[in-house]
Image 1 (cartoon, rainbow, N blue to C red):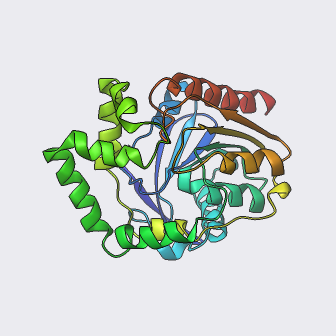
Image 2 (image 1 turned 90 degrees about the vertical axis):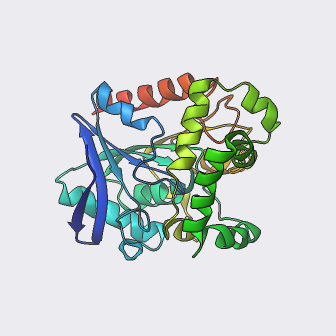
Image 3 (image 1 turned 180 degrees about the vertical axis):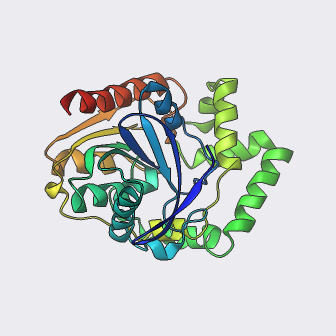
Length: 279
């Protein structure tokens, strides 16, 4: 289904809606564009309505719709209002972690439960912010154009560079163990990546008082994640009462491919289905 643009009480927000049944709101991570697919859309084939908004600064959603995690959370609640949707299970991926957490904090009546996947929960390091500004600030379009060109000309070398930032394992060994389908998946993720102004907003997002979150939370992460180390998942386990933290044997930040992909899918699906039973 094509993306649409909603005019909410908090500003314009682009979104995609597919399927029928209980609503699952998927908040894609940093650099994900409307064309990026991480496999969550398959939930529409399992009895769920999948709502995928473009977070502020990404695609057609203006940065002004929500310049902080908290403002973005309010805008997402306003999107639910606009679409006449009462509640949603929420999936926060990678850099969308703070926004997902803020939504559960600020609008507990709208969030039935929360899944965090390779999710950021701590503030970003100053060095990361500075380096990201050089690559993904005003020149982000050039950066991603270069990545796409390199993926056409020297795909293996470019994939090795990109994956090297996502795994603490030997990147050569990780690539050797990837199936052809995994390689296609990863290449497609990078080919569809754009940062817009959204990633610069992501870098400033912070959340505190996580003990106030009442929703059940499932955290899926891997010890091999170089981009979002395990301490981000461990923070949820330490501060959120109704949380379950699961370390899966994924080879990198990308939990949705490789040896752990089926476990990630099954754990997420069971968690979502249990919310339906409880309701």
